[in-house]
Length: 287
Image (tube, rainbow, N blue to C red; front, side, top):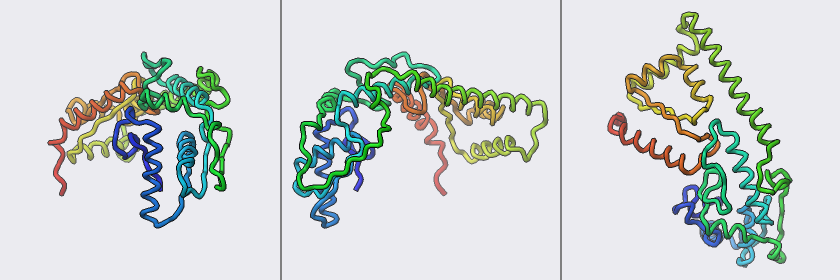
């Protein structure tokens, strides 16, 4: 059985209301549900990273445990929090437009696009598996591949070598790709568009979608090459449809598709809510 903790995935609650103690209770609830449904008399807990640490703690309070599988468990909480901060900083460095509120304080309220409540942060910082005993008489498998980002450098500071590699691999490459699109578009404008060309087919496909009454919205991260690529592929067709109010195009400032800070997530949600309210009544009834 795989389940979502309180405040995550499809489970109820808000992320900033969650706590590790509550998640330990979720593990107990999941075990009881599995036993009731399957008729089993014992369970094996399998956890990854923070989930592995929780599984280890949960094992100490269960008498029906048959075994443990711990994949890269968090042993030292200070190292883990520092690694998250470093990864957060490095990922933001890849944004096309850097957020003005990108600096993490001593007590961050969000991490990698997810809210982080004060209770949760305090509980994570108190994790110390060295103070716990492994369950006696039960097999325990520990998987450690040594490749989890941040374990080698847990200072909490950005690894600028990684940032440079990311910029070269992603940003620079995307810029080259964008330039290629622009060159191809400029060259294609000098020649009549063939009816069987990919550009003509793409434009026709877009028109067909709009003519069927489908409402469309394009959402881009500020500075993203994706917007340029969309315009390069669709040419003046997208502008014509925008003028005719057939489609909408929105740019979210200081954001990125990898993850977006909470303030920009709220802007995305607000944009989608307003767009849905505007176009909901225009959506054709199912046939």
